[in-house]
Length: 99
Image (cartoon, rainbow, N blue to C red; front, side, top):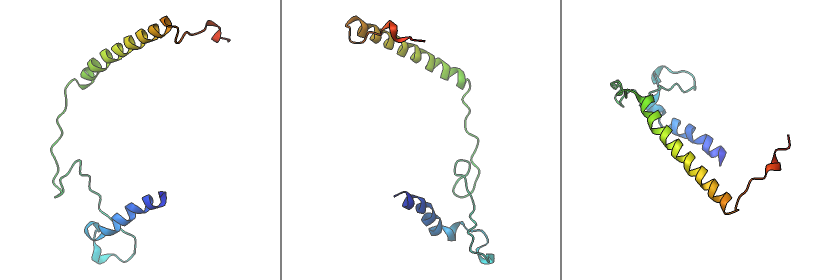
């Protein structure tokens, strides 16, 4: 299975070799030379895309979302731990610290 997964890119590249080769008529060796295209910055026709929109205060917004949810998760876990101790389902023992 792993060997077939490793051969898959080779099969795909050999199918598209005619499209992706550079100077196909002048090539004398059997080493495939492919052109690389990054679709994140260019269109399929080769045009460069405009810069993406930058979100101002991205770090501050992320902090304003993450911190309250961490705090709420902390409160839920503390209350649930207290509930487990109250009903004697889980009670930590004091003699666990044998340093």
